[in-house]
Length: 109
Image (tube, rainbow, N blue to C red; front, top):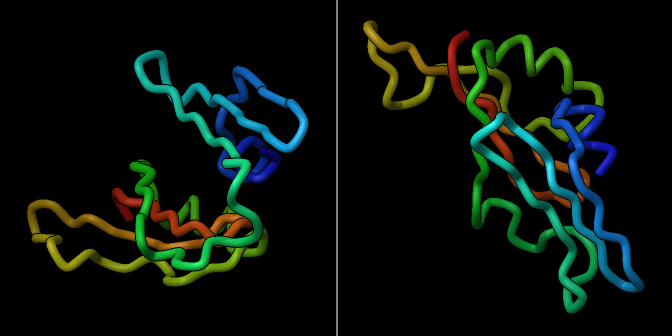
């Protein structure tokens, strides 16, 4: 929870804390909520962190990269995506959260 709240600056809205389980709801904006929870049958870091990649769309990939680069494992520094064009230069930077789930910042430079 601290990583998502303190590093990614998501607004914590609700907490579930019961024995052997937890979950957190974050308010991304008025129309979008993100729930992150623990499954009681799964333990430890993700065994296949790149199976699912979660994208966070931001105005500046480079600014977010600078904010988190010393706080988490970086997989790739900001770079143009393969689908970027001169008219639409989309950048990406990939990182792992504390449980080794794969996330990306996508957006402008």
